[in-house]
Amino acid sequence: MKELEENTIEQIRILLNYLEQTDLLKNKDILRCLDIIAREYGGEVVDKN
Image (tube, rainbow, N blue to C red; front, side, top):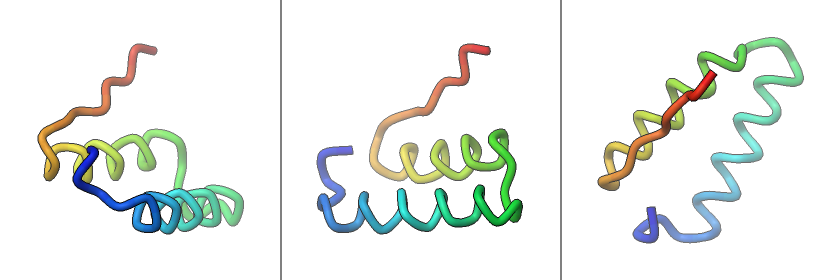
């Protein structure tokens, strides 16, 4: 994920936080979004629950 600029990461974090607080996204949906983003940059988000 190092290829993502800090500003981009911050924008994604703010957007996902807003969507969660307004009940537009649930935790599993946030993890799915993060996984898609991470895979684009050669990573993977793993939900260990």
